[in-house]
Image 1: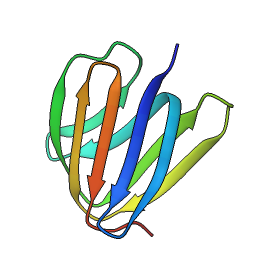
Image 2 (image 1 turned 90 degrees about the vertical axis):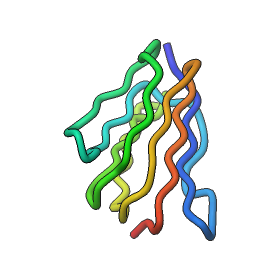
Image 3 (image 1 turned 135 degrees about the vertical axis):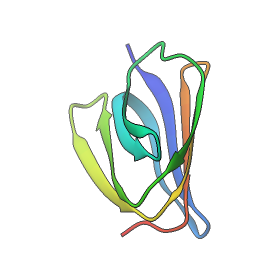
Length: 83
């Protein structure tokens, strides 16, 4: 099973597609998101967001703050910047 993910910064769409897993760190702690995750809104801290795509690839993004929203098998990640 997979879900839709979008990772965007103010200047670009960094990653968009179907994923099997997303992990990120919020001010409340580390999150692991899989298909069917309950609705959630989190404030991200500086760190790494990891996306495991349906093709088996795993990509790490170093982000600077932002927000993460989970609803209806869709994850939206908005960050101030990505390195």
